[in-house]
Amino acid sequence: MIITGKHIERRSFLKGVGVAVALPMLDAMIPALKAASKLEKSPTRMSFVYVPNGVVMDNWTPATLGANFEMDVTLKPLAAFRNQTLLISGLMDNNGNALGDGGGDHARAASSFLTASHPKKTEGADIHVGVSADQIVADFVGSKTRLGSLQLGLDDSRTVGHCDSGYSCAYTNSISWKSPTTPLPPEANPRAVFERLFGEVDTTIDAATRARRARYRKSLLDMTRDETASLVNTLGASDKRKVDEYLDSIREVEKQIEMAEKDGRNVTPDMEEPAGIPAVYADHARLLYDLQVLAFQSDLTRVTSMVMGREGSVRTYDEIGVPEPHHPLSHHRNLPESLAKLTKINTFHVELFSQFIAKLKATPDGDGNLLDRSMILYGCGIADSNRHTHEKLPVLVMGGANGGIGTGRHIATKEDTPVANLFLSLMDRMGVQKDTFGDSTGRLEIA
Image (cartoon, rainbow, N blue to C red; front, side, top):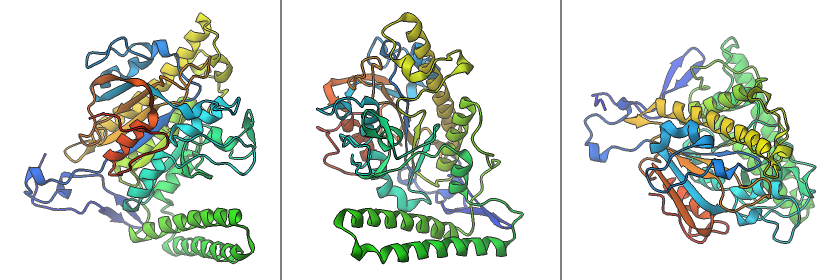
């Protein structure tokens, strides 16, 4: 670390004509000559990456526990980052099981994974599951950043209609839930994500036009809020709750606008604004991963989630020689050819994820890098896709979480340990103290 005589505030900007560029964590942001033992740590970031339709567990799980485990086949793209990996075997998501509700394992897997709650079986508007772990953290740390959290995905995200054996599409398409009845569908369009993070970066627009647009947006929000609030006294209890949640969403948008104004103008990164959704899956995934790196680097948010594909996805992967739809292929019936193709998809997802990890590690942050400061969970709510099992899930955590996680290990939990136990421990690293979460039975030792 270089200690300088100059102190720059953490929320600093390089200002130019019509723009203000947020700075990442710099050495000069550390008070000059401050004792090393008293240095303030860079903030911890949290990300969840979800893959659909389970994995071939025989090609995922290392043969040995401890520090000398080998990443083979599916996990081989992460081999260079073994020392930054905590691989956890044995966790279960019991809420993904039927529990008397019959079919619908894909919808339950997605909606229960981060909420640790069993979703109500419905195709209608009366959806109900639980608040997801990422949103509990976002509520706690979100006031310190422009955006409380980001939800990203590589598929379009319908939240209405029927998607899986009597379950609403809201369950299948959303892993993040702001409240038990409010899913946060992932955004697939990188351009929309970019604009949400960095605002309007068209510097050809004059200041007066930008100000007029900002006033118009805000006046619309005020009008919507006031007119909607005037209806509350005429509604029943259930609708009043929904209106309250809607108004909370409106206020969140207002807060983002106000924070952007306080920042001095919009934030623009050293990156061209994306044109839209790339035609090639890998390019799409890389762009969404890159936007997360930029968001963490500029401290615009500290919490993200990303869905590599919705549960039950029928995407084909011609670019890696798998033209069959993913979901039907995942019911492999233990046929060697199907297992080999499914492993190709699993490995492809891990390869794209490994590129994200490499960029985090290569991005300086204070006296370390973004991977040192982050904890990135990768996994899903289904293990054996052929039988739709929700036990012994594929789960790993990357990054040091500011020294809060003991990586470079493969550990195994006791049988039937809820994945919620892991989420409780991850929340601890973000400063969130909760006694229980969902169906948790305690904390998982990950230090």
